[in-house]
Length: 282
Image (cartoon, rainbow, N blue to C red):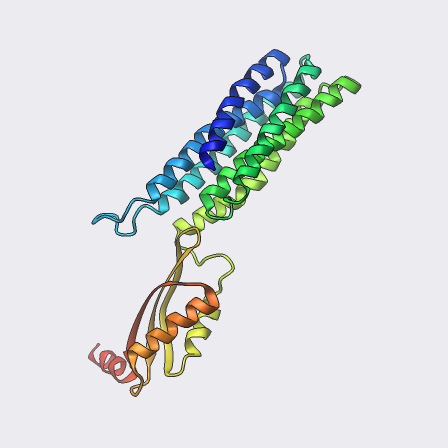
């Protein structure tokens, strides 16, 4: 999916760049710059996916799954850089609006919108798979918004000779890109900081473990994501002296899977008597 989208985006980026220069449209030029960044971003996403499939090594015991998260973060930050350039250019055009060839602008932007819609349809099913794919989807969505804005600006200039529509629409596109990319940056930073996955409450997981017959206490409970959709948990359970540790571990793993979808767990079990002896020894 990414390979197809990358090829389509790269081909049309050149067309839109030429169209923006010929029509003197900031909306088209900013969208072309955005598409150029998309080519790099989609290439980075594709590279990250390939790298994430490599097996673990002695120095990378978790493998390369986090590369996808780093790629998503870089892609989102690149979007913010593009928005900064758009705002800078728009500011100057507000002060001195140039002549824009609206007819050519509308034609080029309309073709670009069609290209972006095709790319969005290609990526639609994959964007829920990982944060990296979601970042790629948002990049292409930003392109589509840019094309829609350029069409609107072109119509406004053609019908009312309102040249301020070009920089005004560009600013609006920039704000939408900032809004849509913020969630990706937030989620990427959360994963890199090993935060508790969004939507999951530690106290609910603790109550679930305490609900297992024989579990007296839960200590050192940690929940984090290695990458999108891959949640890990480690915990220390204190059980009754009469309980069987292996049965408790099996029950904990079953409950964590059924209630929270957590399949990667490390559970340490100690009996109450052993914990009391360790406490006295210290």
